[in-house]
Length: 199
Image 1: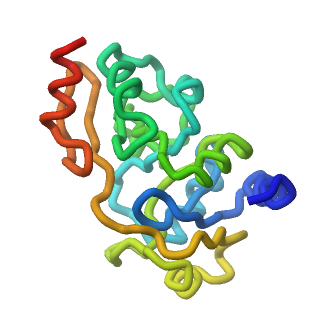
Image 2 (image 1 turned 90 degrees about the vertical axis):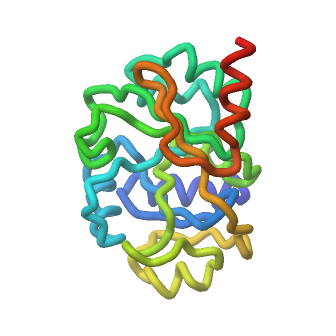
C-alpha cells in the first residue's frame, strides 16, 4: 500500500470501479459511496437485492459529516469510546446520498475500522463502502483467493492482505431517537450501556 499503489486505487475508484480489501474480520468490496453509478454496480456485482443499507467505512469521526445529517450525542459518545473498532453506528442520513446506499431508510451505518492498512487506504482515497466480499447468500470471504475466484475481472483491484482473521461481524447499533441494538458482535451490549451510563 505505497502511495503510488494508493494513487492507482484512487484512480480506479474515481472511474466507479470496485476494489476488494481485507478488514478487521473479512474481505470487503469498496466503491466511492457518493457515486450512484458505483453503488449500483456494486449491488449488481454481489447479486444483492435485499433492500438493506450498505455500510460505509470512514477513517475517523471527521468524515462522518459527509454522510450523517446530524450526529446524535449518544453516537458521538460511542464513537469516542469504541472507534476505531468493530462497532457500526447507524444515524440519520443526508438526503443527497444514493438511494441504493440507504435503501430508502433515511439512515446510514458508519464504522471506523481498526485495521491499520485499511485506515491508511481510507485516509488516502476517502470513505468506502464496506459490504462483505461475497456473492449474495454466500459466506463472507476470509481469503484473497476466494474473492478473486468469485469476482475476478469485475474487480478493478484486489488488495491482498493475506488471510483475514474472520470471527464475528461488527456490532450494529441504531442511534436514531435513542440507542437500539440491531446486531451484537465483538462490542457487547453491556459495554455500550456502561459507556452511555457513565456519560
